[in-house]
Amino acid sequence: MQEIIITLKIQKQQALRLETLSNAILSLHHSLSNFVEMDKGLGGVELQLKSVEKGSDVFNFLVHIGSLLPPNECISAINAYFELWHNLKTIKQQSIEQISQEKYIDKAMAKDLANIISLHNIGADAQITNNFNNTHITINQNTFKIYSDNLECIAKIKGFDEKIEAKTIFENMLIEFYQTTNTQKPKAYKAYCYNLSKSAKNIFIDDDRLKQEMLENPYHYEFLVDLEVYKDENDRIKTYRAYNYKEKIAKQA
Picture 1: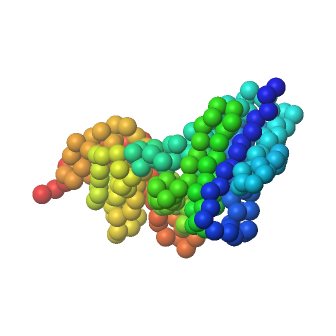
Picture 2: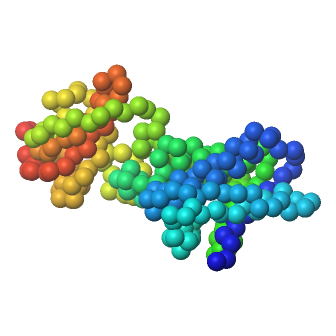
């Protein structure tokens, strides 16, 4: 079987901080290995340094595949890892529900991706190449801002910066929308559920019929739903998830 090589090429204007460089390389290894495990359900993939090209900052890594993972499955997952970076560049074109349901970028993955793009913070541009199909991840002034802004967006939507505890279910609750959007921008819906809190909270709508009817006329009705309620470690409500939509009730004038 043809060797699978991933190349990290760095262009720098000054000496690089060893800590940042080593963190970026380790994070490339961790993020790729974890992605393959999430995508295929099997671990055993690691990066091994094959060579450093003489007279340049070019690192060639051999993708070592564990015995349990078929090579063609590994290749498919590695190609999908590079596609993950492409999707990260355009993720703000998705709705907040789509971003919240994205399955690969958890808190650990987000940290690893941030460590990789941080090469730009130490005065380096970088290109990571999948030599199996010649796809690239480019890190420069322009893409650094896009990647970092979009990782921040994902962190806010998925709540990486807050410790959100176990959910609680409340059936047959009336909600009243405070903020809505019919665009693809990652802007949260907000709603009141006065039986639970006097303030509006972010709400994810997990019911297509509710979303359709709510967007037709969000502010003249209350909507009867089941609610999943997420609280932080201090027992404060942070987020609702609305599902099992039952009916809408016209507000009293």
